[in-house]
Length: 222
Image 1 (cartoon, rainbow, N blue to C red):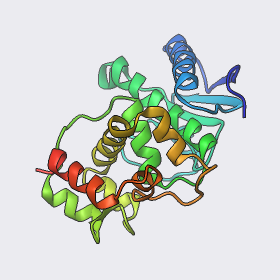
Image 2 (image 1 turned 135 degrees about the horizontal axis):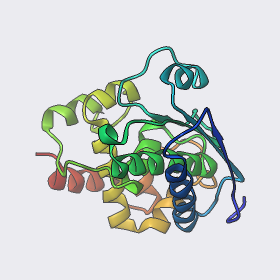
Image 3 (image 1 turned 60 degrees about the vertical axis):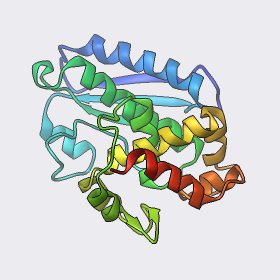
């Protein structure tokens, strides 16, 4: 896998007023992510649209939530699709976080394309600093947890409806603080396991999952 020198290509649907914004952010995000990850994608293509219908056609979706303005296909290591939005509605800081979130997916897919959705989203939420609530309600926790294991046999669609993005971001943050970023990345690398679950992470460090999740709940589930 290439560690640096990722090639970047931009495809703009039409004249985009914020063209330089997307170019600068993409380059700076890739520089940051290349320092964070042990592998990097070879080639990144950023598709930017002004028209929502064109954006939906490109990502092969008929309907998505209004908040979805950027998308990376499952397991893609190259393509990111962005809907250029009104800055007054989105804000540059928020859009910068969205871009970093989505580009992070390219890195996690390069690292291990078989990661479950909740973990891919958690890494992106953590890296893009999108953890906006430092606690989890017991109601949301129960909705996404089965047999004491969060995200076990729970679809990402259902999890997302119950604060799933924030919960998985907190799980990743907790893991990174406990083990360190480099060791966390090693634990989710394809070289060690093709089937990662939340239980796999503490087990990689010879820690009992029960202790890991008990400590997590004490800190975050209110």
